[in-house]
Length: 435
Image 1 (cartoon, rainbow, N blue to C red):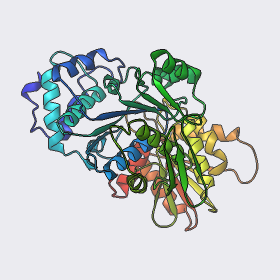
Image 2 (image 1 turned 90 degrees about the vertical axis):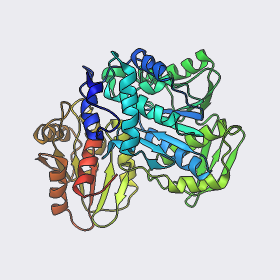
Image 3 (image 1 turned 30 degrees about the vertical axis):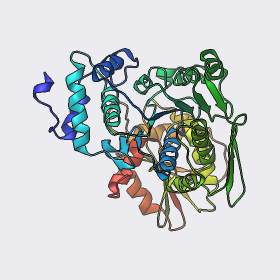
């Protein structure tokens, strides 16, 4: 019915609105429907295919891989999700965000090919972006897994090199509620006989067992690759390659050397097909950028944006805040979706926050600032006593919460905005910034 109304000239926002309506469920894991449509589209990616999964660190690893490959002169496609401000951020070709026209042309092709097959928003847009990449004469594509691995639409692509950055509890409704269950779901992006990078320092046994069972070429952090560093520089050591005297990545935070070493292990594993010289590694690590990952805005008070939305990411955020030096007060603009482990996240940051500004979020998974403030207050009552009790206030949305934090914060204080992509995006938009 839709093919008569929507075509390649239909504006992108109209397409996206339509895509949200064509499947009964927002998330419907499984590869049968998406494979069927991919077959009709005759999708073919000729470049080296990197697939990146993991609970946290996926986006940073993808950004560094893309930047190093671009610095080496290769034509690169990057697919990530979700976006912060504009849908177009999900697809980059040679470092440039895809245009509306490039995307709507692909949407029209997927719509024509799917016929009676229903696709979720994520499945439909994944196929469209893969088709865009297949027509762009690329040397390499870097594809970020949306959710899990085994049944995620990105897993229709047979990776030449697959990376799993970390395994922790998130999306437990879909992936299981133990690291062993989640690790097995993620391990299904590995392929027989191909490099399978794991940068989690303590991977679940299920991941190791699956890699062995299928005959993947497993590269483990601490076994097959590692890093070392001092205050000035750091070094990567792999199976047969060393990269010395590297500058620290432009991406800030305690875990970025782990992510960078995973990206370098991936490049080492395919160096016969895609050699990357040392200078390109240096330039790429300095140029890689990723909005909303411990992003510090210029000026005072210090404003830190972080999309941390599970306890593992919150623990990394807490560590990064500890490394920042002294600030008299820390103000937290906090907005989180209902299906996330808010208590686990609050617990990681409770001792570091003086004032909580709890924001409501839109949509079926969102909730009111009042409800979130209640959860924060309850969680803080179980926090260790000592010093002044933190204040907790509720606001309708992140922009209002941020405005209140700005008003109260002193010049030497810091404001940390976290809890969801939606929270960071709302504040960025209120500041008139693009991602």
